[in-house]
Image (cartoon, rainbow, N blue to C red; front, side, top):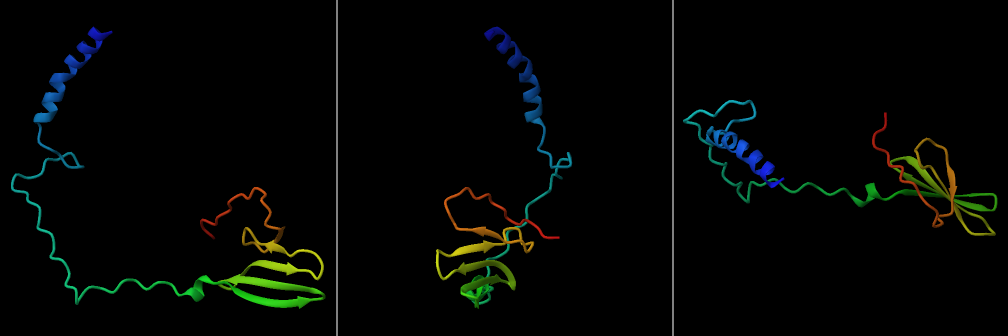
Amino acid sequence: MIRLLALFFAALLPWHLASAAEPAKNDLGKSPPANWTVPPPPPPPDKDTAAPPPAEPSNTELEPEITITTKGKEMHEEYRLNGRLYMIKVTPTKGKPYYLIDQEGSGNFRRSDFDTRLSIPMWVIKRF
């Protein structure tokens, strides 16, 4: 087995030496010209003329709008983000509150008590 490996590497040695002697080629398979040089990098920007850092989004864009309404003896809190209703918290007069959540953004709400049940991630990648 060792002799076979030695023979294999001995056969590859002339090929490796021939490829190492060739000049480096670019992605197109062509060698760069002999007088080819890399241009110097641009100077760093002045502190006075540097562009300001990008503005952070305001907290009002990240916080949901909450509308509280009473229907019968229940209190409903509607949570909207960018004008889209995504969750309703229902607080009955007797019993513990529960949530109606639109997980897909289609307007179909499912009841959720936020128990420790398995929750499948349903992130929206792209809307058409």
